[in-house]
Image (cartoon, rainbow, N blue to C red; front, side, top):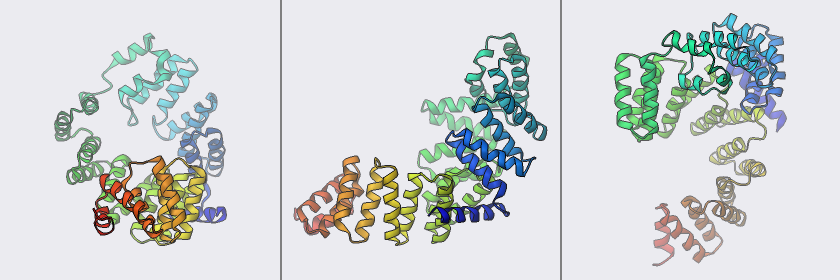
Length: 403
């Protein structure tokens, strides 16, 4: 399995980047480790990436973050200064945070000012809540910085107001304010993304898709909007468009690792079984102990009629995580498909112990008990399934359970 994983990971990297697995492999491995806060291990792979390509700004910037998290501040500053030479002010916020930790207040304010005047500027609220800046807040330099000019425009403050309105459930007011901001042409990508989030939450998928199209057209770098549109396409069963967007996302942001599993699911729905397997195996090359990935692999194998392979995957899933009802349900359903009904019944019982309110499990347990000749128990299960909203159970109740 591990040999296959490495081979497939290499293949995916080559396909994604159009070159050998060298720098991207090291960089992506590092990014995967950073997402689970294993900064020391990530640093080793970033050093390898920089050795092979000394001018790799992304690798050096992320190495700086690892050094910062590991309290290797001088090394972090060196990496962030290099980053800023290549990409103006990209690392200024991290420089400000690092200098603040070192109690170099003037330098911290200097770099924070650079950040506030840059493309990379984060919302004001996030800066004010940043723990690293707590030591600066009572200094004259900090107060002077915020008095120097209005770093955030009225439009910025309106967008913050939208977030407040949404948090308080005042949705109509939030929508009206977002429409006003859209008409003014302010940050149209962010504005329409927020509109899409509201429409999706209310079930208005048509309106959500319309504003997501506007959001992505306004800023092709808005990965959050792209992820929302992928989700929307999948909800609508439009897997061809979902696949196109997912491929685009992973080209632009190959460290959006969860979307390799999303890509696998989409490929499976499109009948591209081999592509689906490759995407899951690539994810497993980065996260070999991911029960979510083994579960996804099992579901793909199940959907493609590979029941014995699916059982192997679900066994691994449950070995890694035995507290999820859905994992027992998936293995039970697979046992049932393989006509191993006694094992299926046990898994459905385990699933119901963990989640007794799942109608699907009651329904499948009813089908399994029928196969085992347990008519009375099957009827009980079908009635529970119907009570919980599984209306397909009514036909079995009418046919085999009498009144």
